[in-house]
Length: 528
Ligand code: G4P
Image 1 (tube, rainbow, N blue to C red):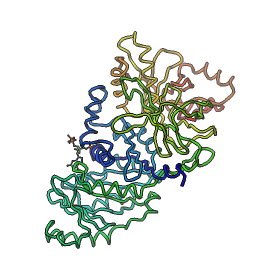
Image 2: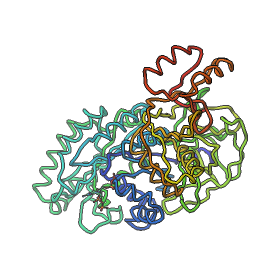
Image 3: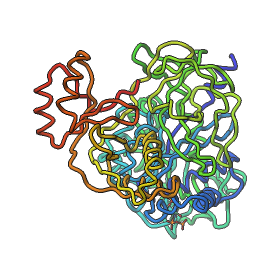
Image 4: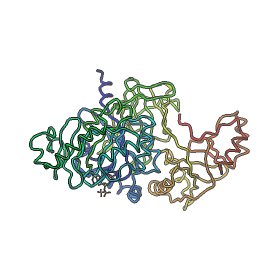
């Protein structure tokens, strides 16, 4: 097998999705621990705290109890290279999450044993279903009392519309938690205080019939377990890899992330069965990861990742070929060859310069405003990857500056933060207003906070009568000019300088569109 194929096939790129508080951060930390990416439990939270110290923006995250960033972490495990893409959990940051999900090959859904399927999980699952993304489930907080396991699987099946195949099964719950049974290997993993629950540091019986097990968990518990397993085997589906890969069946695990219990069986099963890098569609053809020429797309942009460096990073998922430091690549939208130097990878410990990256990997490119979400990089072919969603803003506010001398900084901040894709920035043709469009109201607070923190600009956002935006294109240059003159009051430019119609109402938009049938009024800006 060629090096390219070997490297490609050992990659596993996935995202963890959950309703806030189900335990995504805690589980991420434990997975990184198994990957040797961090040395000590508590490091992820520690990292959060360290960043909190350097950037008050993180204080906002803490105050609201949400995660507004998503990060990429790579770690090796059992001969595989795992790329974990974190997703923000709060509803207002949904777009970012959707785009992260376009860059993964599978997802892991964390569910709180007491709360069951929650609203965000339902939304996120809908997105996974659009692309038939294979999903595994981890039912968390087994050290607490929760719903009956069978009831939970029923709930997942009926609410999320996906078959469940339990891979581990809990023995008791809360105070009575004694362990889990691995339904595929037959092994029983005991839950014991003071253990780390790695394979080296846990008591594992080869089966429920193994001598000594009854003494450890109690005769009654074992008898109940036998009955329950019989019931489970009758009522649930056995694991079927094809169904899992087709996104029709979710293997489900039980455990307690904070205690690291039940996490290793999940990770072992994950690297064995989760899909490697999958082919990706472009407007002209499908790109297979096995192809040796380089291609990839940008699914996320983040400004000021490190406030001390004031950098903007574009996250690119490699779809085929190999990235090598310093290589030249074709930036399709600009129609230009560019040098990709100093790409970053995001190890949990710190950022490091990567020398090579393979399909499934995510690299961070330094962005000086030339890279947009959705951009394709190739080895020269005019490809455009499809399916990276772009959302039209539905809420608009005017930025109001407390110190007029800071106008330049405000413009720069709004433009740079808008590159991340969660907000869009417009300048009307006829006024000096700076208008921000967003999908959720929380984004205005975040932008105001970040403007202050990262750009030292004190600004607030006030209501304005704009109900929707449309990108105006098409027609002859003469028609377009005529349209511009007649509608200057409602026209503006976006951050990239494209013409946008800022409609005061839906009715107004409707009438304008009828009046100018030669022109196209696009609901989203074109990416490629
Ligand atoms: P999120 O990223 O999905 O939002 O969840 P996160 O991991 O931050 O976990 C949310 C809370 O649930 C945390 O408590 C965390 O410690 C707790 N938790 C995670 N896994 C388990 C588990 O297996 N059992 C129990 N009992 N709790 C769990 P917190 O009080 O919000 O934070 P902290 O002060 O404990 O860090």
